[in-house]
Image 1 (spheres, helix red, strand yellow):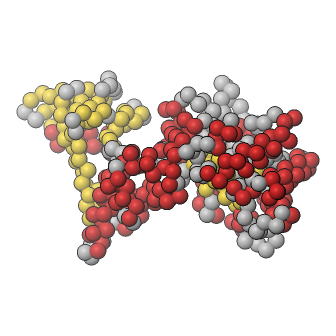
Image 2 (cartoon, rainbow, N blue to C red):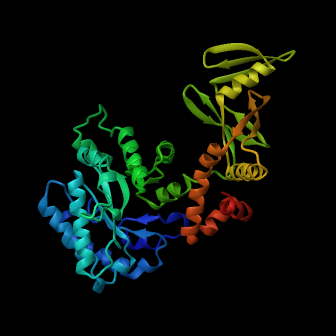
Length: 404
């Protein structure tokens, strides 16, 4: 599995690969696991397109486990073993209060000094799997930068919902994990406050692609752009999910569900039973939403559908809008109106809807977030250039790389 992961490329390869010598390795086999990591990383690490951060054992309540972690990090980082030149840092699970984070940081500092590595050359990522660790997120800002520690080496903040659930003594009737939106928010806030990257924990139903997308969409609304992926298929979905879609689309909010409409010849077709529409003549329409039926004229119908509809902009839409706003700003205008329009089809009845959205500097900055992410990916992952150009087309990729 390590050998296979090390040879992933393009959209199937993660930005951060975590060879796992904790949960994915039997406790009695972890010494061999370290040797396997060294063997594979020394052989394939040079050509791997992302960063490499092995996960070692750790536990806030176990000095012996922490000592094992120290010994294994020493072995992995030994230059004579040939792997450390390709390793960017370590992932530390089961951390506790902020003093425990400092212990892990100090061990990594000692590892660097023992092997003559530049101090701070190995980053540290932690997995938040306890109430103690969650509280430590609020203290990190005050601790980073103090001369008594090297916590500036922090890189990823990762949620570990399974062990967090155990630590919180939480239960659900079905035995399923709680969704823990508060933990994901706190981790994202901690990352934002300290210039780090927030990563959600694993989504272990690896066949549930729709559920995986929903989880990532919810995360992205919290500013959490990364997710722990378990298979190459999940990696591919996770690599694509935060990026703007190739094509724009309309969706309707029906009974608290977002239903995406099918695009047919430039029209967007609703195919469902929760909304019904009938043309009555003389610019009158009968609209049914759930159990509510109303008779509306054309203007009222457009307004009602606008309340139900949302437009998801494509990469081209975002780049076009940003370019238009930049041109307007260059001409001395501080805000402009951008039109969104589309033709929806419900029960065979076509209705064209449209609205103007005011763009000012704040709107522009918010729209820039997915473009900035795209630019970051394109600059740092040349192995994905071909996939991205195939997805969007060379012209829009070129424009996206210079806008903003």
